[in-house]
Length: 282
Length: 171
Image (tube, rainbow over all chains, first blue to last red; front, side, top):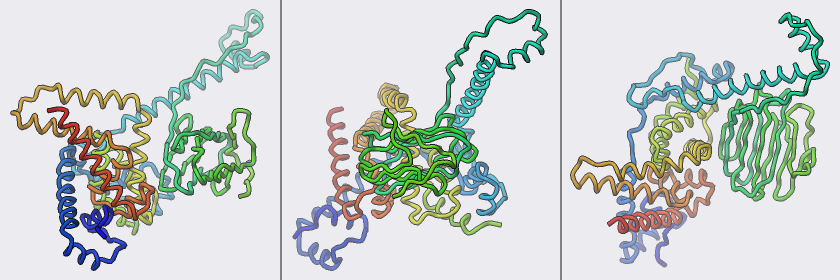
């Protein structure tokens, strides 16, 4: 019995194999064909390593302390103290990419948030001004000294379209996958939709949540957020659980969906992120 | 006062930062994006507050997801950049002798061969090239550890076929 691709590659890479090492060694000593395959595989490995090096660029010259410093800047004080070390020392050694400049992506996001907030504020003020019977109109007139003639009946005003920034993440589902919001919100909801896409997609308007992805989970740090979220679950995902803090609001198990609320006419599950949502049974 | 995790983080960083960066750089072909995302990956590790059970698999997964998200958010722009990158390198007049031209063309062949591999094979090849273990590769790519070698052999063959096909076509 000759050595298969799996065993040959494990020999090339020095990875332990299920097959007894002594048996493999004896076979190699007696089988010229397998020796040749092993030699060719080693040569191919060297060739590929050499080719891939052509793509390389110098790595940024940065040290762990600089990364830790950056991480601490965006952490809650209690979390920082649990990790320790408050000595905020930049340990970057310089170089073209050593010191990370302010991210263009995060800068754009911050401006978008400001713009969205301003537009929303103006829209809300316009609506409040135009609503029949609203005291805002009288206040404004009084302040502006324009309350000289009776004003015509107010016309309904449509809020201008708002440009909202968004944030999101897409990850492939593992066999058991957990999506966890760290806390309940004062308002806001999650709209869950089943799709034929291969990845789980999570997005939120305003982009104020922080997404952390791991092998089998995504954690959404939504502390202080009032945003709503869209989650797309692949129909093929075998087991996905959505938690708010430690409370489950949805479980997808195969084709079965367990939630406290049924799907709407469009097939969307709209689940509140407030503390009022109940826990569906498994 | 530094915590145990702080020291552990530094050890994980020293052992893995460069190879996570190189993996992302080779995978994306965009060194600045790779540098950003490699740093973001370790920022998230630090913010986690404790080391994962399998740090290497965790790092690969987070880094790959960050790259996937960055690319999907600007998918259209990325397509244009890729096309422009290829055209720029090929059309730039190289002041060097024929040897340098060969090197540039060869680099383009490698890039194209990598870019046209299926995502899983591309990741496998690049992760193994960075010395990640079969166990970590299996965990990160959610495949059976017992078939990593077989899939690697297939990925290598696919890479070689694409590279040689491309090189033959450009002669």
